[in-house]
Amino acid sequence: MKPIKVKIKRLSDVPLPEYKTPGSVGLDIVAAENKVIKAKSSDIIKTGIAIELPPGVEGQIRPRSGLAAKFGIGVLNSPGTIDSDYRGEIKVILFNISKKDFLIKKGERIAQIVFSRTIPITWQEVQRLSQTKRGRGGFGSTGK
Image (cartoon, rainbow, N blue to C red; front, side, top):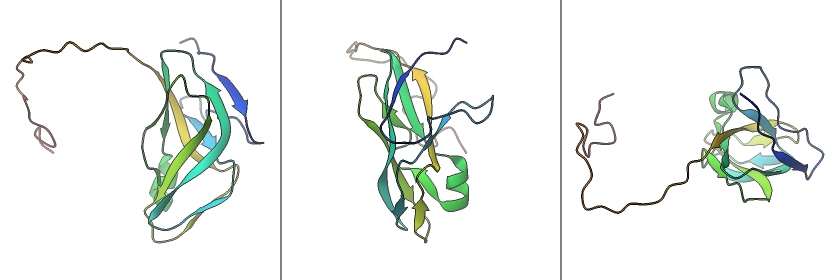
């Protein structure tokens, strides 16, 4: 698949997001600051980058599995969406579910960004929707 060009601006002296392996879907994003995330709380971490996405492309900020599994650190609004018309600094809302404060160091990988195409829609208001076997069942209605 042909890569999409995405403009990126460094706002701090941090490495650009990068794929760590040839099969990686997400590019790792690093922190642009040192910050302590207190136990059982959350905080916003600057990444030191801003991007310009082409129309029809969305960026999604997702957690890093290693931080979650080893330290209880995740992305609070996962996935966080970066719209194609946003031009500000990318910031990541990290949460700490552990009982210990966690130090984020400048240059440390804190999240990943994945890109996807978006599909614009228009609403067609109707009085009825088609029937399905599942119907209105949700939240575990299909079993474990």
